[in-house]
Amino acid sequence: MNSDKIKIRDLETGKNFIWTLTEVLEEINRDRSEDWTDYDVSDWREGWSEWVEGYYYTLVGGVLK
Image 1: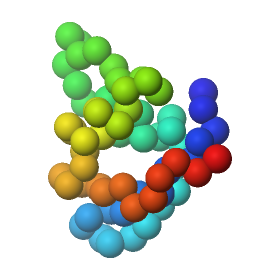
Image 2: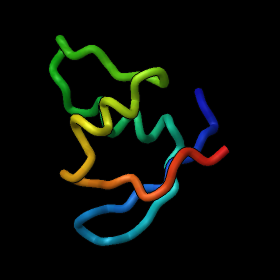
Image 3: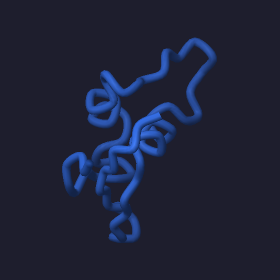
């Protein structure tokens, strides 16, 4: 999909990780109902802010090429 990398921090453990954009999208879109419309590369930041940021993880760094 996309080779961009995103640096995130697990809020429970405090550990930092580098995820691919594919992994970020998997986290945003996981465990949703069948009526859910997946977020994609065009709107992942909105999905991250709404469904992930501050709950489980936080963005530590921007997109790394």
